[in-house]
Image (cartoon, rainbow, N blue to C red; front, side, top):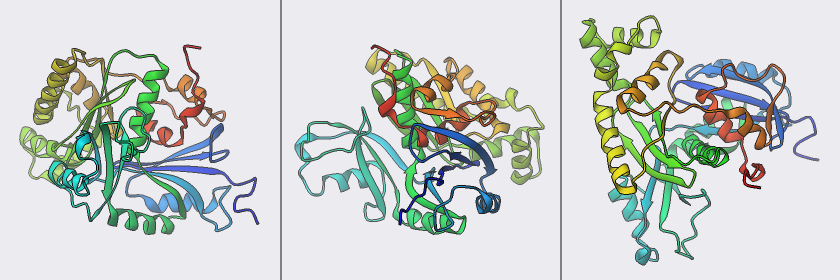
Length: 346
């Protein structure tokens, strides 16, 4: 008996800090049609489960066979220059994990990919020294797999959404024949992941220990609120304009970013062409404008429709999110396959 019938749909779900994004597709692989998109708050897994109970096209188990993307807080997505003379040393990679990334290799599931195209690194050839280390705590993988089954989700793949997003953006820059590098900021609660990338691949990656949570005490102090919980509720409520406080709220983060950008521009002679902020709730979208203004760099605008179509992805009538912006990039990055992208030079 075939595992998948012709009526089986493809599902893709991204579990972010702020939202759960879902796409139901005509099939699991491109070319495909996205028939429906849904969004749930990050902690509302019950609504996700209720939706999937009645959703069409599940497998014979009654579960939705899904490609899942995760943003674990302790993820490692780090570009690193290898010492090719030490590749064959048994302890070399563990030394990188412990000394450079400050993680226990025994407790992490790690993979090494080439920084230019995301292909798996072949240490037997040892001819490529610019790589990206990708990983997360192994216990988080086990816990997430168990949790997904309770949500009516059968995870065919578990991916780091950060890696999928980087791959999508590099491919997008190639598609647009962009000549300028891009600064990507993934906002988390405690950490902001920053990347500089170009059409040639990921140039710099750096986690900055300052995220959205660090802004709450500043809000409390600036507005004279009685406690941080009150400040948090107001901050996320979308009922108060925090734009004028933007520089105060992001002071530490901006200082670190200016340092990274300055180092990159001196080393390469290239200037950052745009800034893209992701993983922000809708109520904090104003942070994008704050960051770009403070850094003196234009806000990067995605024109996703042509790129998606070139990748064999289109939306059914009425199914496309409005607006189709960076909030959906991570989900669409998980769906995309880049083998079919049109070569603009031909």
